[in-house]
Image 1 (cartoon, one colour):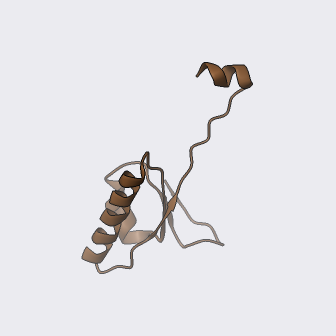
Image 2 (cartoon, helix red, strand yellow):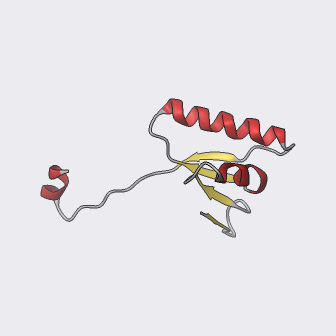
Image 3 (cartoon, rainbow, N blue to C red):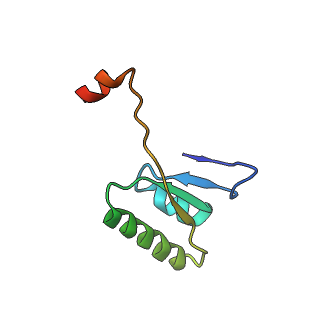
Length: 80
C-alpha cells in the first residue's frame, strides 16, 4: 500500500509483501515495516539498502510500523 501525504516524503510504502520491495526501492522515500524481531528488521533494512545501491538510488528511510489490537473489554483481552 502506498500513499502521498503533503507533509511527508513524496511516497511512502508499507511493507506487506516481498515483491513490493523492488517497487519500494525504486520509487518510494519511506518504508514503514513491521518485523517480529530485531534481526528480521535489520536484515530487511540491509536488503533494502543493498537493493537501492544496485539501482543507483538513495535508500528509502525505514521506519518501524505498529500493530494495534482493540478489545471490547479487559475480559476479552485476557481470553486471547
